[in-house]
Image 1 (tube, each protein chain N blue to C red):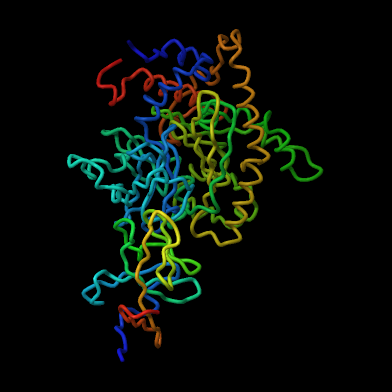
Image 2 (cartoon, rainbow over the protein chains, first blue to last red; image 1 turned 60 degrees about the horizontal axis):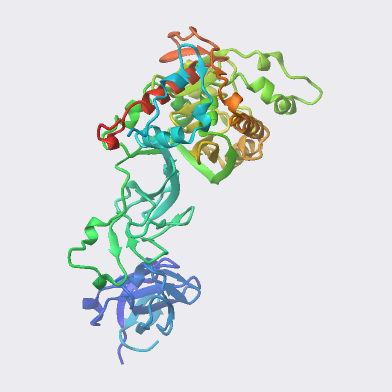
Length: 111
Length: 426
């Protein structure tokens, strides 16, 4: 069983914000956005909004959702399900673990 | 066909007379937007409103909506707040932090450099469409002076510092107490007044005269209980700075000039201020007084009030007012200055209400046909302008219309001069 990829320290991600991890690190088709909610939890979604070319890591994270910085499409942090227009397609979630203040990513594993 | 009015006959600075049409005429008002506001350096914001990339504040230059923001290189820039597609504002918030400015009409989105970065249904546009041609219109020149950010649409302006001239010496009396500079406390108060914007700008440039009459009740309120107003308050002597670019400032001069708010007064180190700014400033424009930076930015050193008079048609203005404090002030001194400002010159301040009432009164009657044709008197202090060797530039008496005459002379000059955008068409 994989131990995940160590991609960041928890303190690198301010609450309510995100950072993008490049696809050559994650081995996925798209970069992955690490998104930290105000309850301290960290979630991972495919970084590119399903509507237009925008980085969800630049978006606004709050209350279990991330809002795209361009056109305000919303996605569930846990499931990646699209919550509101203009996007109509859901995005892909990935599993995250936090151990000793370090963030480990499990690309393509369900949270 | 010319659409411009020659205002020479409406402003007689040699005779000290003003025609009231300059406060009421819609054609003159629209000419002001073209020839007074568009070419001038206009106040935008305070640098303390921008700490990280994406922090923004929305305001107006004349009637043009603008976004002031800090870009990724931490440079403060300003853009016309109007989408290049159908023209709606791309930022509707008063202030905040953002990554992009997205139009809520169709979703065109611009980055902090004003570049068009997202166009929904991009494939629907022809090949000839280049996103690079459709960025936000940028204000070509933005500069700051001791924390005050100004911008101008003029593509080839004289520098901000040069346009301030000797006025900068008087501004420093308020902005440069503290080597750390100034900070903004609280938000921006905004209120609407009936009255042409010049009535307010002119008063702050030139008018201590109204203080004892208009503010009599407020002055009584500030007098110690059981004592009448002091003669030395009513019969103040001082100077009024008269700037050739239309700026103006008036202030009582006295060796014991003090800040009115007790906590602020007690915190100030007047000896250090004398060493830093010189005796003339500490005994003059440091504490009490009034000032306007042409055309529509004004301030009051006594309480840290800085404000802009946004024009909203010939007969209406919006006042936007900030409170600034010295950065070194501890919290209780900042709070004392904030409260003193609020009580005296906040929207319901005991002095501010008197001023607003006067401007609205003057405006309300000026549309009468006969009234409009009766000129107003600006003759006080005629011939009193001189260089006194103590205060820089030309000064007049504290009670004088001299800076007002200079304000209107500058206004007349700009109104009668084709601006860069007219291409020589008068």
